[in-house]
Image 1 (cartoon, rainbow, N blue to C red):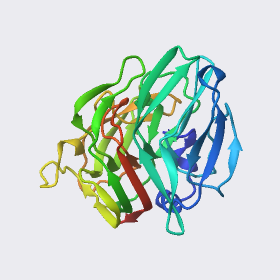
Image 2 (cartoon, rainbow, N blue to C red; image 1 turned 30 degrees about the vertical axis):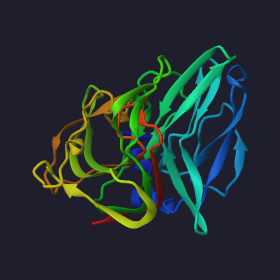
Image 3 (cartoon, rainbow, N blue to C red; image 1 turned 135 degrees about the horizontal axis):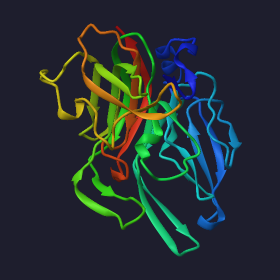
Amino acid sequence: MYISGIPVSAQPRDAVDLINEYGDFDRWCAREVKESGIIGGKRKFLYEFYGNYETSVCDREPFVGPEWYLWRTNNVLAVVAGVVKTSTTVFPEPRDSGYCARIETHVEKVSALGIVNMEVTCQGAMLVGALEEPIKDTKSPMAKVIYGVPYNGRIKSLTFDYKADVGHETVRGTGFSPLKNMGYPDYPSVTVILQKRWEEPDGSVKALRVGTAIHRFTENSSEWVNGFEMKVGYGDITGEEYFEDYMGLNNDEETAYHCINSRGKNVVVEETGWASPDEQPNYLIVMFLSSSGKAFYGGVGNTLWIDNVRLERE
């Protein structure tokens, strides 16, 4: 299997080291994109947390990070039917003498020549994996994200600092109908998953769930909580006191994980069951989301500030 077109065997450095290398969020860069004139022609910025605070003009060029940069925000460039549009939901924000990452859910408004108006609920996401650019259509948005990177070790925990403004009412905003308040709250979530993946002869990809750590932020925190720790549970955790339904196997059609198989095809990763607690994984998923629901649904106003992200090995 592949990640961002790079064969698994080509990864020369440990994934945990590569992930932790950028976890202080003190280095950022921006891509400056001029959106199409039909939707206003404004210049927008797409941020990633590597670099030397440089800004480059990319317009229609797809994202290219530095070698072995395994993180990806969902700050994305779209070119749909020739129209250039951006979406930014992850931002650098000063903290002490450095920076942190602000991940938010908001409504993106699009007006074409003052006639066509669209309102889309955009969830903030910061993940380990890939998001191919440019986005060319709005079909199956979750399938456009490639979750995870090759990793053969075991993780003890994920630690990070955070602040949170959470629990805002879920708003559906697909862009094809008016915004709709759904009447229930939405919460940010952080996920660490270890899988044992394999590819079948027909190209489908299946996986056993080896390790799980998922946390939803259900309470506001206006002050920084430093060194928050999420411990990874191994094997079948459904009998544990801390288990919640959202920690279970993910085979939901709208939120299932995707990967690129050996044939270069985007396919669903089907989680077929729980691995034994001593199973050795071969894939690692890490993601920070400002909303827990499916695409175009989210608590508008949800904001999660993150800093000093670090994976600890067993």
